[in-house]
Amino acid sequence: MYTDLHLHTTFSDGTYSPEELAAEARRFSLVAVALTDHDTVEGCERMRAACTREGIEFIPATELTAEIDGIELHMLGYFLDVENQALLKAMRRFQQGRQDRIREIVKRLRKLHVPVEEEEVFALANCKPPGRPHVARVLIQRKVCATLDEAFERFLKKNRPGWVPKEKISATDALEMIHHAGGLAVLAHPGLARSEEAIPSLIDAGLDGLECFHTKHSASASEYYVGVAEEHNLVVTGGSDCHGMNKGKPLIGTIKLPYDYVRQLKERLGSDHPAWQAARERAW
Ligand code: AMP
Ligand code: ZN
Ligand code: FE
Ligand code: FE
Image (spheres, helix red, strand yellow):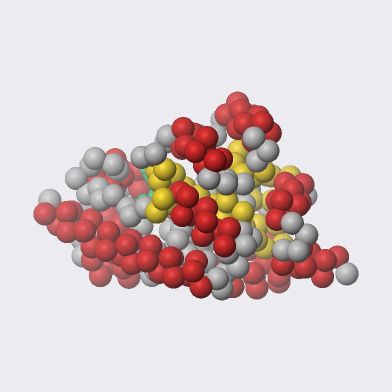
């Protein structure tokens, strides 16, 4: 009984539709999945329906970009009420920020005489929270770059000529927003960038868990973060961070998180949370 709690679809920068992703999850015999698209929960409705058809438990979630003590980090929110108005309003703001950022990135690239049009990126992205991978894919289509890595290395990475910082909310606001929407807040891939340094402040601000298992964590890093989670009474999660075909081989199926961790997440939510209701209905 395995699960993958970090997945992206075409509703952000993944390449699988919710239906394709659910079919892949079934192919890898996953019994539960969470959809963690950047700055949106819009794909959750279709993903839930597709998972129901495949007999897979679905957890509505998201991945937000936040900041604390000058450190940029990604915050996962699990078991969200996807109709929470404050959450949806904030997400509309992040999506607008991402669209403005794309315009700025394109402007910078055009100054370098890179042939790319705003509308081309928006058409390819075809989602509300467009991101750098969409720009990279246009650069590949235009034969400016051969690979996504090349596009990031030459143009899109921090301090490269096409780099534009993303609007970030404070991590304390992110935690509050997730909690108000009934969710659990989990620090994504603490082993990447400087995220780990933020853990003490995040714990003070009410962090619920750590994504200990991730495709970019070594076995020893995962083990280390499990230790940190135990020490601070945080829940443990894990996921592949699959973006579909973005990087050649899809990552879904490469992280097999035992289902018991989902049970622990639900325990942390408390027994009156709607997620339990759904579980009880299934049990009957
Ligand atoms: P953004 O949200 O626009 O800042 O873009 C971040 C996304 O870009 C992440 O979710 C990664 O999946 C992707 N990304 C970052 N670096 C690379 C890279 N070198 N190659 C491909 N994708 C990348
Ligand atoms: Zn992404
Ligand atoms: Fe991330
Ligand atoms: Fe992600």
